Length: 125
Image (cartoon, rainbow, N blue to C red; front, side, top):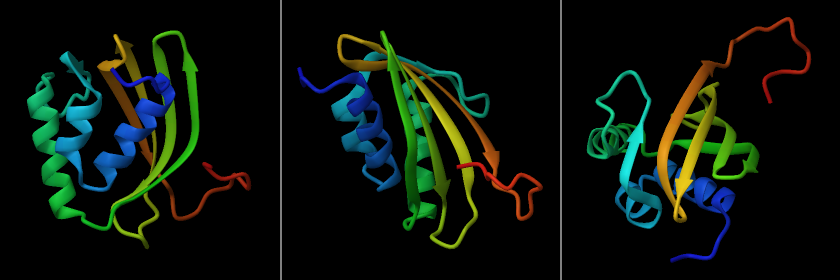
């Protein structure tokens, strides 16, 4: 088993997925009993993997910018900016992962589009 921290595994997983290396991301980081809570897909590993592969094919120039990664116990939260193309404003996304035996066992994700105009001078990132 890999000796890296869960935080490093979570960010490694996201970087590989964003780069279109979905099979490798699953091979390295996803546990045998993985489940997820994305409401747009069935909750099993294969359904989410297929959606990630489809997205990677449709968006080969995706950009992932990790802003923060926090680890507490068996949970890791990663706040990122994800853009489908380099000139896209993108989304602010938070992924939450639960680990078992060094592998991702469960995940949640929430996202919000980056608005064109915002009254908040601090921005989303």
